[in-house]
Length: 350
Image (cartoon, rainbow, N blue to C red):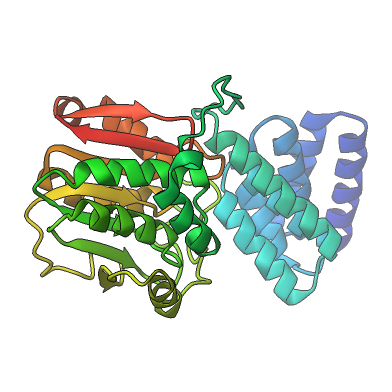
């Protein structure tokens, strides 16, 4: 019987190489009728299925081959390729990690597979979010003539990932929102740079309401959904409460009220009835959604919500969420939307 299986396999491989796919399939299936877990027959039948654009049918065959004989490098590579082809990027990554741990596949080969995952994932995820660089002709830089902003910026620039243009926009929106009857909230603080810019504007306007700043200080949370691209969770964990305190001490201004943990999940008893200003800088779809759904019913007329990272490549989760809000008739009837090219999207309560 063993001799018959070997002979059938050799004949099947020969037919496969000659392009006689029906004959090759027949011989592989004859083998599997006798020995369902035969690794080479399963693998080769999987390869044949992939060549016929039947990746879904190939996956269980590759998996069986790999489980039966995990020492064959090609079995790993074929299974990983099929998972990527089937858009099962997370599963493909898990198989890559397993192969690394067992040391059964060359690092270079796994690196190439991982690069392909990233490339395919980006292409798929960004297909509905077109990117194109635009260089505005206007060159006016009002921040260069704002002495108060310039003084603050020189101190905060090493405590933020937000550029000078966006920080200036935050300042002027905060100055205007300070005329409204509502509290201020920033979610996603990092080392406190943008918080300090907003707080400086509030104090300059003598805004009497409260200002809350929220962060986990363990990096990005609620990331890795199908709506996100680059973010998986834990990014930007290189910040601490001490960084924020250090910055506000340097500026010698009052610190906002700090909320440590996931917002709003970890703050069920937070008593905010009205919001005039919200800055959401949380990088991921689900995290943005959680923050904004909590804030929307609390926004006062004229109140503003600013989304950071809108339109940035790699932050498609934020862009997708804002675009979904824009298409929501109930939300759109109550808010004006501004889709900036500077990395901000702004909503204004009517």
